[in-house]
Image (cartoon, rainbow, N blue to C red; front, side):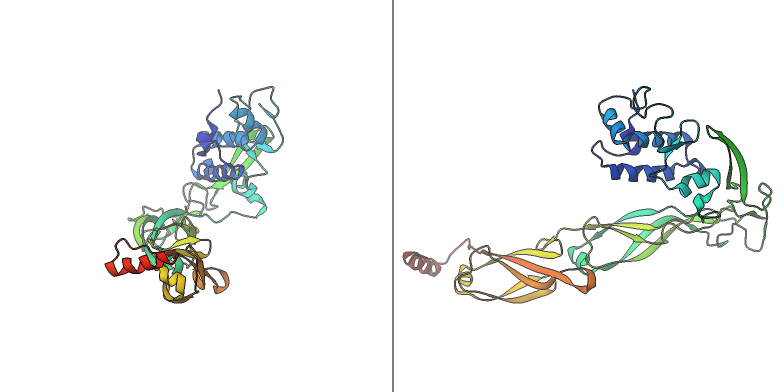
Length: 359
């Protein structure tokens, strides 16, 4: 029986091709052996994508057939030429993966970008709750994060203050280690960052007592972020450089903020418009007049025409959700007849008279 490829990629059986591709890329980066990941898990992730990322193979898999078995098109060893096999069954689809991200790290080509790429820290994802009003006009929020950041004592070089950095004995100051790897295409020579000095070529003469020479420490910090106006529920905001700092120096990752907008008892959102409902007396709908409409900006005086039907929608422009170019949507209010629960004797008499007149 084939493995449960959907579980390996962490997607549902109804996942789209784009969702499968995104899951593969994220997991492959996370579990890449050259980034300290599990080689066996990396192999399973790639194997799952080779099946679920191929429409015909996925169809066979969904029918309970092993698409990798010999005798099926593209199955078994040597199936298709859309991938590149590194030996041991680890196959990368070149159409869907960044050559520089994976092959450059494994074989030292840097994907044609030239030289070694700057290391980058992990991203962080958090959730923030907003009121409806905050989602319309924006808000400043303080977020408490526990994250890996540059060491406050050694400022990231890993050395105890007052001591110096010395040449790494493992890579002899080059910051790189050369290795040879045999594959079905021949022997490749890979160049990887030195694990002892994290690719810097130098090591602390005396490691920092706070970070133990890694240049980073775990900190609890408050981060101020600006929520822009017009955000919607489940929107994801990206704050550059507020993620975790990598060991050995490099560019910090990013902070991703997922927005959750609390439901408002009076207003709802439809695109860039705000929608509400207002109960008004029958006399206003019949005779017309002015009325104050509650909006997110405050009361707005609106003229109601004579003989306005129950359920009529009135549009107040420029009182909705902000969007590009400083424009705003509209506020749309639905007028409904307010039927009182109790009537006075005088009100009943008046209504009886109106009833006799056909109203």
